[in-house]
Length: 318
Image (cartoon, rainbow, N blue to C red; front, side, top):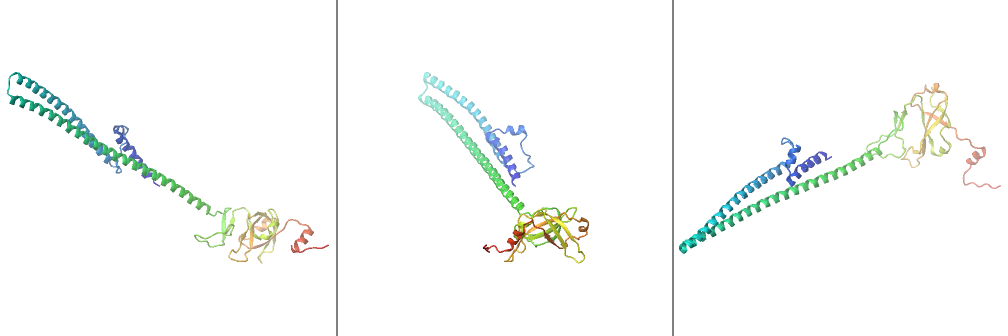
């Protein structure tokens, strides 16, 4: 999401940190400087200030060299004037001449102090300028570091939201359990429609070499239906009078409601039927034709059948 911006900010840090450490030559040696024709990096703004301060420091060093020479010259002048003072005393000079000479000595000393003081003020102003530049540069580096952290945090949050969204999408995707063609759409679903679990949405014909029948059995008969059970198939067509024998291939794991809006709703189990005994006759059946299916239940005893026909609340007395 923010990878391009993060990459640019990291490049800024890579360029600005050597300025803070005063190691600009390392950037030139490694060829890390960006092109002036590229993006507008903040580095160039700070580099201009850095170069100006470096030039000011060089000028200050030259002034310091000249100052040392001037102080040496004034020290010699003071020494000459002190020798002159001794000669004036020995030669019997007037007090005015002696005082004038001493005034010159003190004047030289005062000017030496002023020169030193001016240089100290220059050095102080330079150190202040340098400190302000480093403070501003440090604040900018800290700000960029915080921006990178915030963008990376946003990336993590966005990645999490994207993963969550993908999870929601994947959990709401309805996938047919078999590959085939759609024969009938049972419900005209719209965006936001609620689908009950195992609710019939459409009828799909499975791609297979043979034919299959999709039937539904009332939920109350579920205990008597099992995979492999024999079934009789009767075709609801005047053009087709034959009955077929087949077997139950698959039973839905849960029941579904045929009409959820009906207060007296009935639930059914979906049953897939294949393995026809007379395959040649079945192949003549057109796809989608309605049929009646009669399943053969598991074997039960006559006594169980008789008992099952009575109501559960009846009591027998012998």
